[in-house]
Image (cartoon, rainbow, N blue to C red; front, side, top):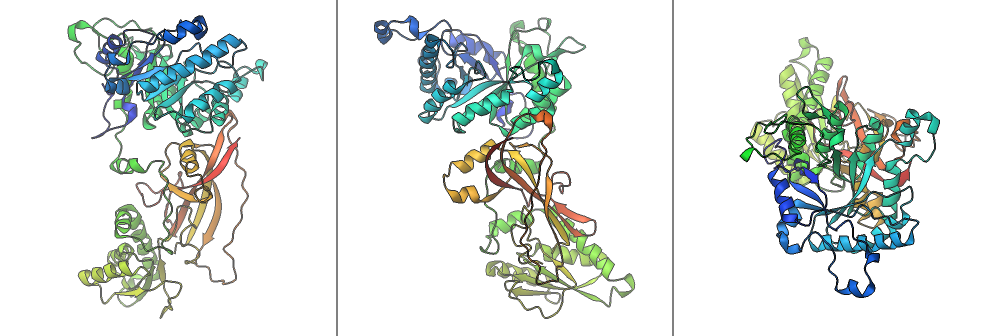
Length: 592
């Protein structure tokens, strides 16, 4: 049973909670017990833990049935696929010093993954590497991944302290064999060449690393978080609950579509028939799953999250989706593109505010009826900036004369119809021309444009626009495993060199962003070059530990007029504006 529903049609994978189980050769009964107990899927051991290939002779192994937990026929294909995640034997150690264990491990690993693939499981949980070296384990797994179908492999990794955290907590043992679990994961996935079917399942312990250390995992392909019952505290009523930091982390997992799995024995004495912290559901026959109170608490955390705003729901499909930036100079935009951007009412209200302030500053009240301000909209599109400017004139009771300059002949048709429909013929003059070729009949008092890209200067400014008064671009190093894999899959230089527009979600922002280029308009000099170069040094917090930089996120902030601004730089971003997503520029993975 899903944990809840944050909004109509909520399809987030994080709604589904699993439970880790011990080996049981009666899979149908095991599944029924846990599904009726409220869980959505099992983390189930596929092979009898006593099995070792070396214990079987060569002759018997050919006719001997492997000790899997039942036949594939004991469940329907949809049950295997929807309700079971396979768990590979935990004894497996492919980097063992013992040759017999190493060979047994390799054989068993291949057998169990082959069986899981035969069952059409969606995912399999791999055991945590046993030591600091996992080269042979990763090499064998990389070979398996090359011929694996659609099944995901989750590598189990403990969410423990970075080397910096460990040294701070225990300075007497600084540098003595401390393992940063992220380092273990990173060395493993590098050998597996960032394979997109290899993911992470994080073991959540009772103590958590620093926020910076935890934050780097949100740029990694984390699919599951396994929370042990001994990580739960006890509230005043005797029920399980999580610490504030664990609550924050769990909520972040929910927001990143990470599925929660509960593991361990019940450690809270809940009276039989009592209900958990969030539900008062009657329990049929008085029976209650031993871990139901933990499940109820997670459901409570999920349900108390704020529902996703309508805009966020609209943007779900764009999260971490690579889009090539628009090229309005080279291409004529389509009607559907114009319509999408015209729905951004927040953006145009900012433009209206800026124009209104500029009109009031330029024309005193006593001259409002006698002075006409010449306003030019360069890149008028289908007219939203023209409308915003006229609304500003009406609001301030100032007179306007507008030139609407647009190079797209298809948009010009719409502009002419709009002017005729609204009765603006005496106010608005439409110019069907590239702004660079147009010889204006008079000087503009106010210049209006929205030709900024996600990085400020990556569309038509400043090349065509030497209007915002001032704008600054920013960059920030990020871990973005999904974006890296999406670009890598194309295997050509063009995609590696493209700066993409992305609704960033599964990323870890490793350091504060820094300003790059600032452009101030108007620029009257014809000799000043727009070529820029900047060298920046980013300081990643010391308690983060190691991290992999997959590229840079780019933002901008623009001053339209005086204190009216719009932008996407995270700390000052214009609320609820969706015309611009962040820029993402790929970088060959760099280990910090």
